[in-house]
Image (cartoon, rainbow, N blue to C red):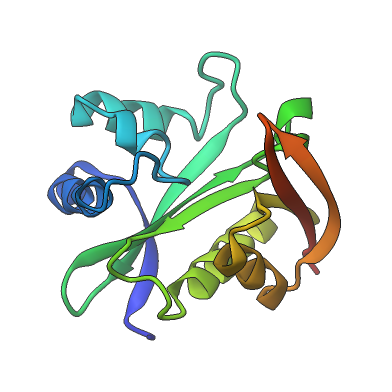
Length: 173
């Protein structure tokens, strides 16, 4: 699995990003966490402009955020997405945290989530974060096991929009 790296969205990657989105829609999934709203994108050029802009300026009152894709060289495929939020609002402290991420339905249970989260934690260190807050639905066993495997410590359970979730903290040393 050394044949992967984090990449940022670019016009050169739009075709394979579209294929990544189609893997979710073909699996009847309506959200792609960590993709900066890719699942809602009707115009990819506008989506890309906004993704790039979010790194340096607040859009619609949201925090600065960097969107990454986990890219596999051998078949030139996007296999995951993650958004690293540079700071947290009160709402993000309760739901969402610093990082949201997804793995393509076709690539799950292959260890990519841990690799993706580890790489994004490194990016958090680079921008000066000392601690990362993560949340997931309480029944999302794969996600919370990934968080724990990357050093996550359970903080608590809470309810958000009627759904029980777990909140984890990861110290960045």
